[in-house]
Image (cartoon, rainbow over all chains, first blue to last red):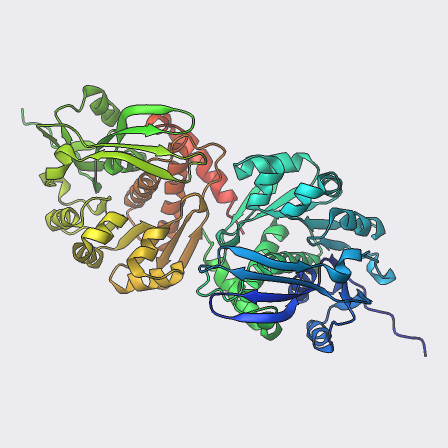
Length: 307
Length: 307
């Protein structure tokens, strides 16, 4: 009997996989599953067949793989390397607005060389979560002809790898980053000016994340202003941006169309996935999340935006 | 010949009238027309017949009256008292986020006793801009049967006149205040919890202003999340909240209906009026604003919110 062909991947997600130690004013958790790829893949899996690209160490326990399998995304692009998994620890201040990094151990992530399995290479959608721009470029080179590519970045790369980051920006359809990063990268204080400058560098869309204040999608001919779903309790903000992006890309990949309406709806959905994610540590809330709950909150959120 | 009957007033606005000295990183202006009633009446006048209730001193120059007459609102409720007009001076920090009060001279405002002219008393709409709660109560007592009453407040009154403020809150339909004031007044960090508490005190609607992040309308059965119109340049943020509220109440009074749809549309319109107001010092931008420009930006803003 021939071995079964793997199901085609609609959305490739490359990013970090790590074990996080997180302290909030209410609680502390040690070595919980985290990293941008974990959050984004989990979120995307509610909508489409996602394939993870990342690296873990030989200490990455069976429990963690079990969590991944529960979401049902493709793990063939997840490398296992001799050594310890990437670790991060941080503490959130009283109102959860500010977080302080206590330690970062790159471990196997320091030597990460993303390698796409053959059946990932024709995926129409690609999300380059926050990793070194040089690695993002390496992934871009391995994809055949993606229909839509989005990339995230962070302050660190603006400071230490600007030339590579600009190369990435030239080759993607959508750049996502947060408010302060957009200002830092462009030197413009007004978001609308920062976005206009970034659009000039190549991408058709700039998606600026504003945390509890929502997000804005700047395209060449239109702007979409999206507030955030109002939260009563935030238990752990870690992964909010990545679950937003993962839900956004997953919903977009599921629809298959990329147009202004599809992008706006995908933002709503991504925002709702993120609103669930922050209700508990790590992926705890998404693991229990039912499609029915998700659909209900999307509907409720839409009603809050109607004019 | 009998003297002409004054045109009926649809919206009564009571608040402060003052001369402001304002310093921004770019410029400084001395004794420009300001105060919550000035901003709110100017904004409301684009939509409805508003009547001002306030007080100025004998130093209040003809130029300032000329500006008021240009907007066309009713001035019969504006008292002129022996003495100097209320004065405020403040300075905005680099990114306009923070302002510092340099001086406050109450002058004639210290003895203000609002008195509604007869033809104001049947007005269906009332906006109690930010003044002492005791004065807001005094105005409430003078109106016959207003259909819809909104009130604004500030930290000062939460600290020094909480009992009166709570009396006001019990008698109005809508309370508007900013994010930090809502938290201060209720002791709740999450806006949704703060709003729920405030709704329990009487008003049917709580409108929380979030500055450059928009506003949220909490009603008993629904929530409306409104982002702010994205601005390229802010020349003077003074009066943003008052022009928002004035435009909101003016648009509502013009429509005559108070329902969720009308409230949401009025918020959009108020937000657009405020977006113009911050483009110049004092009422300079609103004085030049054409209904056509306003309508164009409202349309543009709506397109930015569509999902």
